[in-house]
Length: 402
Image 1: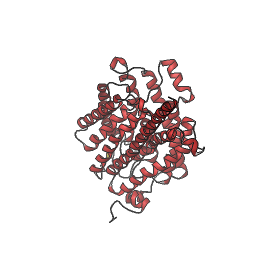
Image 2: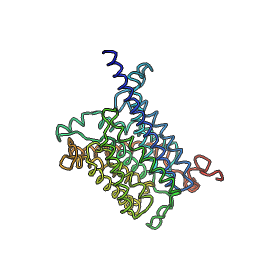
Image 3: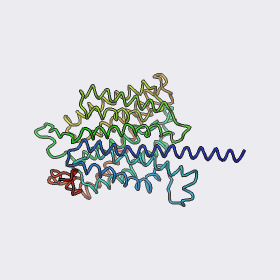
Image 4: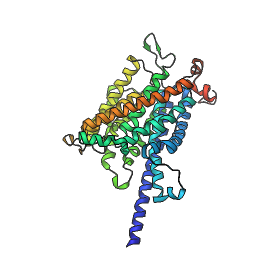
């Protein structure tokens, strides 16, 4: 019997390791989505830069999170023998891999906002600071109970802050850091003249659409695999993810008047918003959350670009920052039993937790990008920007003739 029990335990642990590994690979694939979404949105002279930024940011994020960020969030390091690390089929290592792909989404989100006019190495340094210190600070608070914040919320409001898959922890934090970086960087030359927006047309709608589809597919790993073990897997999370994606798409289609950029970012808005409460909501609630997020994105993107004159190239603050904040709050509304949810959430805790994540992101973003601006500068010169980041930074264009 002991032998059978041992084999069963090994099988369970191996299955959990494989499960979370598949999730890590799916979220890793999402970074191709980030890349092609940016490639399709920027002008042709900045496509190579978009591709190189995403893979470079990912690599730097991996090192920053391996040596610093994971320790900040979970008080765990990997400075031990390989024998210790391979215990339990290496589950702890694969869990790191999975959570690292979440952390690496922070600079990938920021990249879309600061596209077409940012220096390369100073922004890479800022990304490392965000992944090593800023993001894991709130990750540890929300997902590891650091500093007693969650216990305080539960004591005072009946429930802790709930963010199952990162509406605030990942997307909200990334989106609000991006807003800070965009404001510190300034607008692209020629974007606004005499108070009017000058259209910079996307270079490739097919690439933009490809990026959105890759992100959408990978999101099911992002959400469903956040259970981290097979016994925690939930079909409810999968269907809620689907319904929010559909709601976001249709809302953006209608509100955005068939604009392809809005239509392909609509599903992403819905997916960002549903992350926090995807394990709690009724599918109809998830549909509503996604639809509201799709509308938020369209209206906020137009407001940001046209009225406030903030040159957020891919609209990452509306998409991740605002829709992420909506998702954090929405979990406290549509997660309630009265609205068909599973309950166990507090609207006040969701509001306070969301504001805490936003505050850490803004302050951390000011530090990370402020340091880089003072020490190295953030922007390309006007001539380099006119040439395009491809030629100015990488000495090659997207086509062989450039």
